[in-house]
Amino acid sequence: MATMSPIMNVMIKAAEKAGRNLARDFGEVENLQVSRKGPANFVTAADKRAEEIIFEELKNARPSYSFLMEESGAIKGEDPDYLWIIDPLDGTHNFMHGIPHWCVSIGLEVKGRMEAGVVYDPIKDELFRAERSGGAFMRNKRMRVSSRDNFETAFVGFGSAMDAKEFDQYAAELIKISHIAPNLRRFGAAALDLAYIAAGRLDGYWERGLHPWDVAAGALILKEAGGFVSSIDIEENPVYSRNLVAGNNSVHQDLKKALKSIKA
Ligand code: IPD
Image 1 (tube, rainbow, N blue to C red):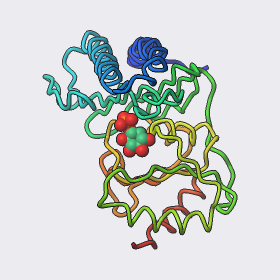
Image 2 (image 1 turned 180 degrees about the vertical axis):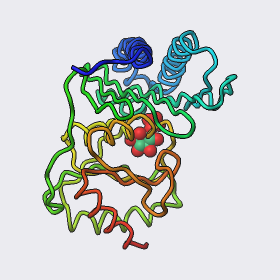
Image 3 (image 1 turned 180 degrees about the horizontal axis):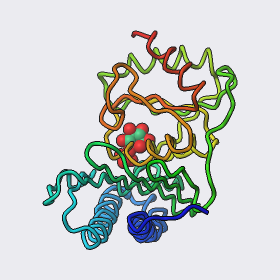
Image 4 (image 1 turned 60 degrees about the horizontal axis):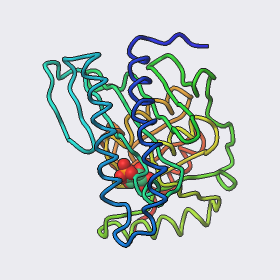
């Protein structure tokens, strides 16, 4: 079992507290499916509550750090070098539809580099975590990416375009990639897609139009599990690149090469 730093303990406590609340709310979502308005407002409120819980926990533990959060945006602390990057509920649409595949994602960036990350799936009680240079763990068990190096049989996750501007590019990519690697999966929670590669469940993943809070924690966890994550088109910090390709070494390379050759 790896030693856990005080900051990791703080992050886990915040993720679990928010996760427990969300899990309770998730129980209610099923009842709301049948109402005509559906559960959308309820889910937005649950999402915001979870963010408040995380904010409070982290602010109490490290009052000077800054925040970048999906719901509340950027909040500058006294110390701009330390930045929490938070998605209180990644996989919102799954949550809203009563599909038990969503998570809490908390990353800590220090001077522009990811330092620690936690991705927590409260329904399955699976906690993925990593600190820079400390390896990646599912709770206390070391994780490694898969060693599957055959792109044709690889399990590859993807996210599909919500933005009409990107439909054509997505369609072209889906057609081309599914000809090469037909075992595609669309799970609907980017942070879990990255954590699943770290756990050796998926071999690769790509998506366009992501936000830093979808990616920050999962990207570090994946790297610490021996995986690779990069921007599809240009070399830049993948957390901020929006367009992401990830995988074990071999599938990351093959997938990136294939994607770069596709133009709608
Ligand atoms: C979304 C999920 C989804 C991905 C979207 C994200 P949210 O995050 O990660 O899998 O396809 O691009 O925006 O909105 O549920 O936090």
